[in-house]
Image (cartoon, rainbow, N blue to C red):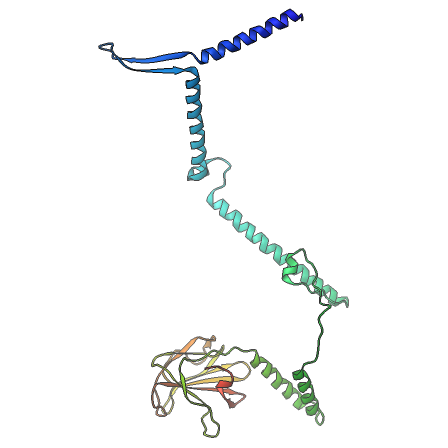
Length: 307
């Protein structure tokens, strides 16, 4: 192709381009006439550039409006492929279940690993839960030093003294007594009622409990988990309820106005079992006579509970 033809084609392109842009700038007049009087009512001067701009703005508004309707209204559930609300809830639920399942699998693997180490005579690896979540990094216990406490030494001496002159019968009783002491030390006793102590525990005066003055019909609560072994009325102590607890502990509540539990029922710590009253002959006003017995021996309730 010769240079003259290339030049001519370039000039033609430039001329057509100028002509197109000049047509965009041409002004047109849109006139509205009255059909009866032919009077001009309204007119508008526009260009092709203005028309294109208005059309573009309208298209943009329609696109943005349609997207907003789909994104922020329930219409989005009508779009094919978009998950419904029930499906989204199911997805979240499945994700939570999957995470729980993965945690249980890690715990199972840790358990099997420990069992395998014990069977093969090796020391099982102790892994903390936080470390298990962090890629299973093993905890280091090399810096822990175990020392013999004073209580341990006293216990050893006590057991050795008991074992010197017997075959082992009393040793079992000592061990059982110590286990009960450990169990009691780990118990958290609940205060049976809010009030003021007017008569304290005294073995010399045969007063095997404490008297707590409280407002009438105040709720009396169980000090520990247990089973009701007595729920009755006597002429001297009125309405009485007794609860059997662990470690051979029995709690007794006397002079109640009304009992809420029957014999044989299980009660939880802090659960209401009666109302403070003034029943029975051995009473001088609304109060609770409260006792704690262990192994058939009365003990001072203030040694276990802070009133």
